[in-house]
Amino acid sequence: MLTGSAQYQLKPEHRDRAIYVVAGEVGIAGQCGMFEEAELIVLTPGVEVVLQAPAFHAARLMLIGGEPLAGARHI
Image 1 (cartoon, rainbow, N blue to C red):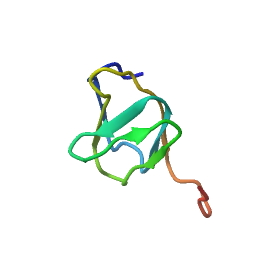
Image 2: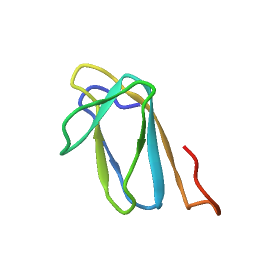
Image 3: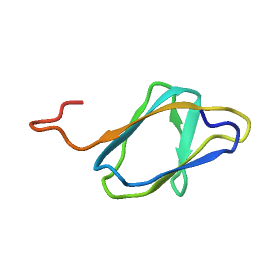
Image 4: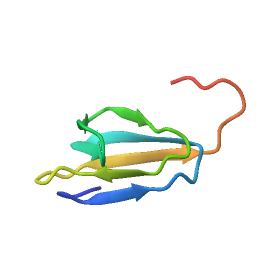
């Protein structure tokens, strides 16, 4: 959970990474716009990302990541 204005640095440790917004909304530092509840954000491999919650709201997130599975990926 990110509370008002909190930031979380997501390092590029794993090739496949995603963030699912369970509740609230979250932004990515340096980018315009916010991601809202029930959105899945698939991150670019090898890029460090800083997540930020809005000033007066909390965001509940699920971080997903790991090494790629063998075979095709279906989202």
